[in-house]
Image (cartoon, rainbow, N blue to C red; front, side, top):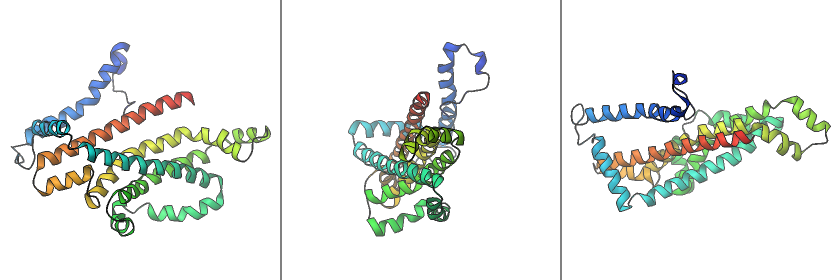
Length: 263
């Protein structure tokens, strides 16, 4: 991923390693784009699979006209709220389950039962409860992102060094102070790993929800463009939301590295 190194990087001079790593990271995307270009109009009819050049032109058109911005804002807002709620509740729930047998026994069965269920299968139920729109999309994003955050928070809190906790108690730290000054800081790396896993899941869940239960957002644009046979616009919106997901993941990785250097 963002922090990965490529084989033989030790032979590259230090000042050239970052540019070389950036080039290496983009090679797979370039290969996919070339294969896509070759397939368009040969293996698959160009009317069904527009070439990358055609899709790039459509992306430019959407950005220049501003048609996509309102829908993109709606989608990103839904992701931010759903993911934010999953982080807040997931961290508290995971740490609570690790530190209290009663909390763990109460929520363990619920989490075990809901884990195998594809969250998009809950969209019809969410529509009955909340209707078509933002609330349903936020709920699906929240449910999809919750489990990895809960599990990582639970594992991190369970693995906190017992000697560290014992030493803090011996120094008079107890109750909430023990939680916030000892346990929570020790779990930050694992919690951020769970959030890193949840970020791409949030985009997947959002588009899935918007394809079924929305009248705005990028997923809605993808659906409506495909329904009328406007495949260049459909692919353009797919590329746009994919690029947003890529930026979000890389941005979070950079933020995680900075946070972890402080901890």
